[in-house]
Amino acid sequence: MPRLLALLALLCCVACSGARPSPEETLSRSLTTFHSHLLFGRYDDAAAYLPLEQREAFLEYYQGTDDDLKITEFEIARSELAPTRDSAKVEVDLSWYQLPSMTVKTSKMVEKWEYDSAFERWTLVEHKVKDD
Image (cartoon, rainbow, N blue to C red; front, side, top):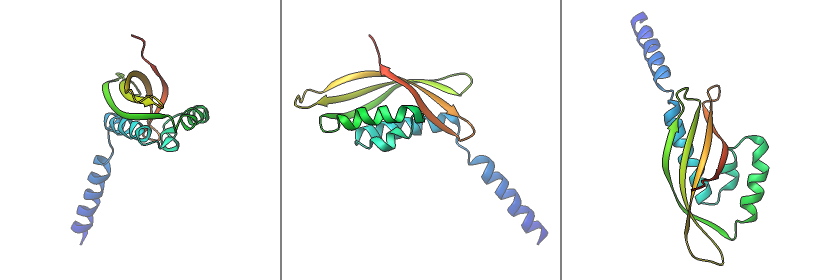
């Protein structure tokens, strides 16, 4: 019986220590999830990835254009994690159109994400159209 308890304790330790995803893994998931929310018009869900003080303006913008602005696809073109692994610079290609036009345009976005290790989550702190 003591050997069984020791084995169970060891298995629990191994399972708990290996279950934590790396910042790189959570960044990839956060990028895909955030941009998927934009694609499908789930702006409340997308806003959860922004700091509290930016959410209201974000929601006003996207909900105000919801009937006219349609994002058709996105591609994470580049992702560069800082050596400290607590921030990342990301370039995203967003394809979209705005009614009444049906012409699809592509914008290159530059985003800055920051990692909160206490909550193991990434937050989009800055996003803008890339100047060519």
